[in-house]
View 1 (cartoon, rainbow, N blue to C red):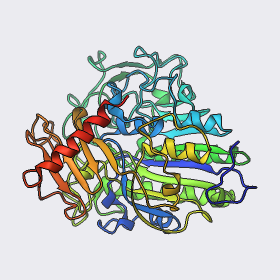
View 2 (view 1 turned 90 degrees about the horizontal axis):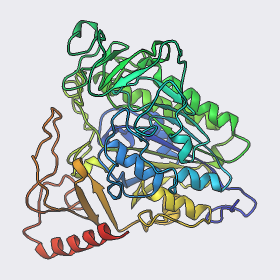
View 3 (view 1 turned 180 degrees about the vertical axis):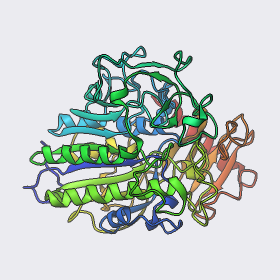
View 4 (view 1 turned 90 degrees about the vertical axis):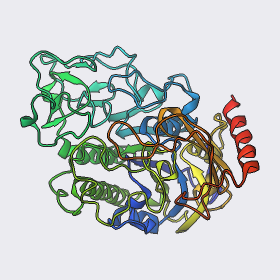
Length: 489
């Protein structure tokens, strides 16, 4: 194994590495960023003990593409399948490709994935009643305990190392994303069976009193209970740490909060005053706090680099009637930024990004530009291994606060593979066809325009002043740089 030499003595081994990945959490949803009103003491503690990035980014404003980038070190738009996947989609990541868990596994780490996956399973013709041979384990994870797709899609079951948990083979799972199974109730036809009602879409098969996307039959003993999901994932994450505490480990701990449907445990229901979305964020914050306590209890905090972030920006009504907008009050999930989930504007991908490594990272704030796609290159640098992903910059010293020289450019993705380009403080959004607002019920700007847009985020973080007409030479220069990145193999 390589020896850490950036900030420790030669006798120390490389640290354990944990990525805690929230789902649809905005930069304003985390109180240490001082722009919202919801308290998140667990995440705040991590920031107080570590490094808070003010310019941390996901690569995409939707979850599958950003997860793909984090685990592969490659921009998602280089893979034409890297879009929001159906619940029965085939595995997105090529098992033969370079991945972050493979990189760490090759350097002596035991690797685990717990929580939301949404990167596909199987070959596109999946049999949920037999071992699934293409999944998290095949792309580098020694252990995996994941939801099959997302919490709003069927099948609503957990998959552990390629097998559905608690499945009764006498009650097989059937899944179809086009046609319902005869006699099975749906949210559209049987609203009286629902405890959470859809606002748009999400009106197909019902499990646990919630209608989802897609149709499902069977598997009753394997169905999850949404209210217990956070506890289940937290327990599995802590078990993985406990079982592997004597050797280097990498854990991808992917929270499901505050993605819809937002159904937190009864301990958190009603606690935020903002409805289920706020309650789910309090639950996620508690999970972070409890996990960090476990590291302390196992005596691992001084030998564990923890990275906290979110897969994309926030959204309020994303398919269920949970009063996220009506009960928001003065809270601003997007902070002082424009846009959110699905959007090309900055709040779509400008997310909370915090690192903690007790005794190694000096507490503070970093304005360096860094992206989740850089984790592959940065950890390769830690391990003194080759960075095999050109999109991923080697920024380990930035990650631990030893340098403020982050990346100088970044490409972000909104809906339908549409892209934007940041260079320094400037953001250029190329012309894109399409409506200015999302068409299916989500109250969100797309960022699309038939004219190029240009904003200076330092002077105008809310992107209210389009400077494209005032600085056409800057638009032209950025367009050329952007096209050069896109054409690079």
